[in-house]
Amino acid sequence: MNKFRRFYLNHLKRKMFNKIILLYSAIMMILFLIAAVMAYEFQVQRIIREETDANLKTAHVLSIYLNRQYENIQNTVQQIYGDAALSDDLVYFLNNRYESYLSHRLNLFSRPGEQRIRSFSSLLKSYLEQNPGATGVTIYSYPLDFYMQIRPESQQLKYETGSKSEWENWFERRKVYAWDTIHQYGRFWDTVDPAASRMRYSYSRELQDPWTLDKMGMMMVEFDAGQISAWLNSRAPEVHGRILVMSSQGTVIYDSQTTDSYFGQTYPYQAKLGNTGKWIQLDEMSKVNVLSVGNAELSVVGIVSKSSIHASTVSLRNSLIIVTLLFIAASFIITSTIMRKYSKKIQRIIRSMSRIGEGDLTIRIQMPGEDELQQISQRVNDMCERLELYIDKMYTSEIRQKHAELVALQSQIHPHFLYNTLESIRMKAYSSGAKDVGQMIYSLSVMFRSMVKKDTIVTIQEEIELCSIYLDLFRIRYEGRLKVDIEMDDEIGGCRIIKLLIQPIVENYIVHGFRSLESDNVISLHAVKDLERDRIVITVVDNGKGIPAGRLEEITRMLASPSQPAGGAQASIGLINVHERIRMNYGDDFGIAVCSEEGKGTAIRIEIPLLREGFM
Image (cartoon, rainbow, N blue to C red; front, side, top):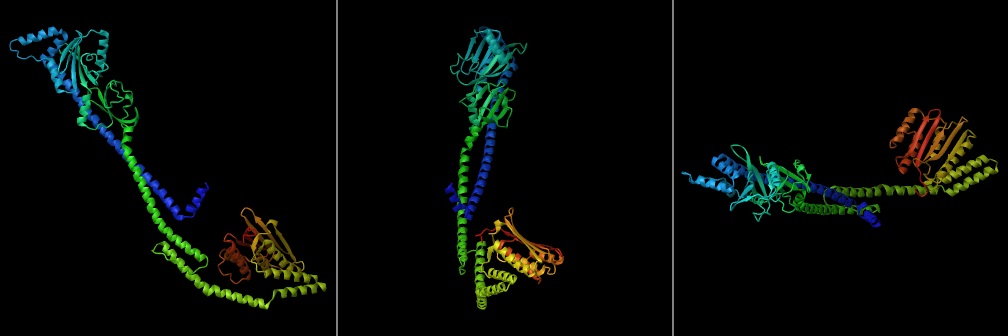
C-alpha cells in the first residue's frame, strides 16, 4: 500500500501529463474494446447467417434428391398400374405360387404373335439400374406369404415360415409409416445380403389389384444412405452443420454426422424443431432449418450448432484481440511521445517560475512554437520586465523615502525622552493630589507605547485593552457621562488580530456619536467566538447620535465596493479603511457591517477568522 501511495504521489498526483496519458489511454482502451466487441459481434452474426444459409442450401439440395427418389418410385408404380400386361403379370405373381407364375409366363410366350412379354420384374430391374441410390426391391405376397427380392445383379424368392402375427404387426406399421431404416426391421435382407450392416433405409407401398382394389401385397424399396452423402458431396462439397432426414414418426433415416449418430433412432428433440430461426437447446444450443420433401412424408433438418460457430470465430477473435492490443499500444506510445514533448515545455516554465519566485527577475523563458505554452512564456517574460521596471522606479524609491522619513521622525522625537517626560508629569500630578490627571497621563503613556510598537499583529486581548484605555481617558474627562461595557470570551483572548482594527471604530463613536451634554452615553464592546463558522465576531454598539438614512445608504454601498472614493466624510473613511484592511488580510468573506438609526445609536459588527497564535 505504501509503495502504491508513493507511486501515486510521485507519478500521478503531481504529474498532470501522466494523468492525462492515463485517462486518455483508459478512454482509448474502452473505445477500442467497444469497437472490437462490436466488430466481433457483427462478424459472428455474419458467420451465423452464412452458416445458416449454407446449411439451408445443403438441406434444399438433399430435399431435391429425396423428392426425386420418391417420384421415381411413384412413376415406376404408375407404369405398372398403367400397363395392363404389367399389372396382370404382378397380380398373377402375387396370387399364385411361383411355379404356376412361370408356367403362366411360358404359356403367354408360346402364343402365336407374341414375341416379347414384359414383366414387372424387368421394369423393377430397370428402375434399379437407373437409380444408383436404390439397392433392391422386395415384393411380398399377402395370400401366399412369400417374397421376391430383386437386385441389379440377382433375384431371389423365399417363403416366410415365421410367426404370422409378427409379420402382420410389421406390415401394419409399414402401412402407416412408409419410411424406415433397414437395421431396425431388416428381416428381408439379413440372410441374403452380407452387407446388411450398412446404413440403409427403405420405402414401403401396399399393392392392390387394379380391377378389384383388393390388397394383395407390399413393395419395399431399399436405399443406401451412403448415396445421400455422395450426392451432397457432388452438389455441395462442404456440408455446413448437421443434416438429418426424418420420417413422419421421427425416425432418423440419414445423419450426416457419423459419430453419435441418430440413424435408426427416434429423434429426441422433434418437438422443438418448429422454432426455426431461434437458438434452441438440442444436444447443444443450435439453430435449425426444416424442409418438407413434397408428399413423401419426409423432413430434411439442417442443424447449425453454437460450437461450430464458435470454432469458426476462434481465428477471428484472436485476430481482433491482437489488433486491438496493437492499436492500444500504438495509441499509448504516440500519446506518451506527444505528451512528453509538452511536459518538457511545462517543466521548463516551472523551473523558470521557481527562479522568479526566488527573486531572479532576469530569467527569460525561451519557448519555440506559437501555441498556448509559448503565449504563457511570453506573458511571464513581459511580467518579469514590468516587475523589474516597477521595482526600479517605484518600490526602491518608496523604500528610500520611507526610510528617510523614519530617520527624520526618530531624530525629532525620541520615544524614551517622551516616556520619561510623561512619567515625570504623572508623578508631579500625584504629588499635588491630582490623581485623575495622573491616571489620564498614565493611560496616555500606555497608549503611546502600544501604538509606536513595530508589531502589526497583536492578540485580541491586547487590542481590547487598548480600546479600554482609550475609553478610560474620555470617561475620566467627562466625569461619569460615559458608561463602558466590555466583554470578551476568555478562550479567544490569545487569538491574533491586525493592530488598531477595533480602536478606529471606538474613536469613530467618540468623534461623531458621543453626546457631550448628555449623561446617559453608553458604548458596549463584545468579542465572542462563532463555532458554526469558525470565526470571531466583535460588535461595537452605542446609543449615540446615529447616522442619517441617506448617509447610511452611502456607507453601505461603499462597504460593498470599497474601491469607490469615500466622498470626503471622515466617519466613512475610517470605516472603509478598517473594512479594506480586513478584506486585504483575511479575504472577501470577512469585513464589517453597519446598522444605525438617527437619534438612537449605531451598531457595527466586525467578523474576522479564528486564528490562534502562530498562524500569522
